[in-house]
Image (cartoon, rainbow, N blue to C red):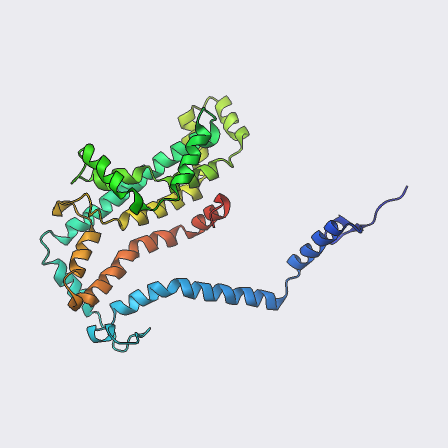
Length: 306
């Protein structure tokens, strides 16, 4: 009885089939990568990393420049005489605002936290229903969600204002919170992840007597932790940077973004103060992203987003 010889290196039969030979070649290349290839890959990653970190570096450098260095041409990517006067001047300016700076900070933190939590809860529940329960119109609803990803936030500004005005939410905290509760990006991410949960796992929980809310909270949510952490980061960043200038006119309800814009509107004499304020503004989103960056990358890899 004849037997085929087996290539013990990659467990593929020796054959003249071009497809099998191509697979064997690719496996060998993957297992025996050249040092030059690794070095080139590492070099490309370093260049991309420096390119992406450049805006943060420029913002930090500008915040440390004295006023005369900010307007040099051509601009420098370094600071000759670093100073912290911009941050001290920022503290002096915020003390002269009509409303205490702590009030602006509270408004931003409160709106960002409440809207982010609400968005994650609503998006995850909707995603669980669309991913694991087939009902009339479910595919149409998901297509509408995908289609909404094509529109920028500026396109929906007028309809948003009309809805908030008709419901009497203008000049309230809800004007900063409600528009973000139904964000489509978080729903899309959650749906893509929840669709990968095995139906057998949910069915076994149902046979053990678990209700639908129990299955959603105790079974599905722990599995899709990377997805809802990513939705948290994206939502928090967007809400934190939302000025709310179109539907918040009460000075005591305005977020910190509006206060910093008012400071910047005083003229070029406060350019250093504006640079310092910009550094303080991107610190919370950056810290949030760094804390969960591994989960964010895992979500992007499994959701189909490039």
